[in-house]
Length: 213
Image 1: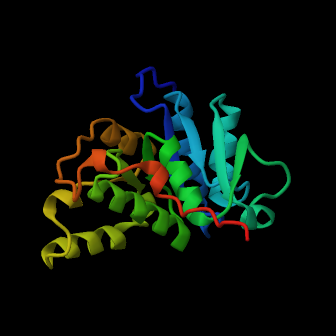
Image 2: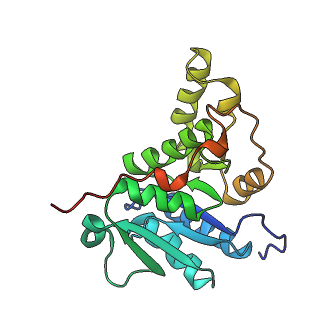
C-alpha cells in the first residue's frame, strides 16, 4: 500500500545481517522494511553487501526507485558482495571508517535482526546519541521478539544504575517497519548529552590515516 505521508528522513541507515537467518520471517521483514522506505521515498544507507538480509533490502529499495549507498571495508568485498553490487558502493579502509561514513550519511538508524556486527554497529549509534555526537533516532525492528533479550538487558541496566532512565528512551523498538518508522518520525531526544553536541566533530571520529614511511 502506498504511503502518501512525507517523511522527515531523506536517508536511513539500516544495519542487518549478511546471513538471512533460519526463518523466512526475517527475510520477509527485510523486504517489508524496504517497501516501507520506498513508500516514504527514503534512500538507503547500508553495509554494502549483496547477500543475506543486506542483499534483500538493498535490492528492494533499488527496485523501488530510491537511491542505495553501500559502505563496505575492502577486506569484506569478496565475502559480502556476490555477483553485481547493489546501488553505489563506497569502499573504505576499516570498520571504524565504515561506521563513521554511514553515520554521517544517514538521518536515522534501524537495526534488522543480525549478529555481532549488527548489534555492535547499533550499540555504537546508541552510545553516540547518549554522548551527544548525534541527535538521530535509533530503532530496533523487533521481528518475532528477536531483540526482546537485548531490550530486557537495557531495562536491567537502568534498574542496576548503569543506564540513565532518559538514555533508555534513546532506543525505539517495534515489531513492524511501519510502526517503527512512525515512532522514529515522532522521536524527540529527552536525555541529557554527556557532552554538548556542538563539541563533537564527525570528521574526528575516524582513525587517523597511517603515514607512509
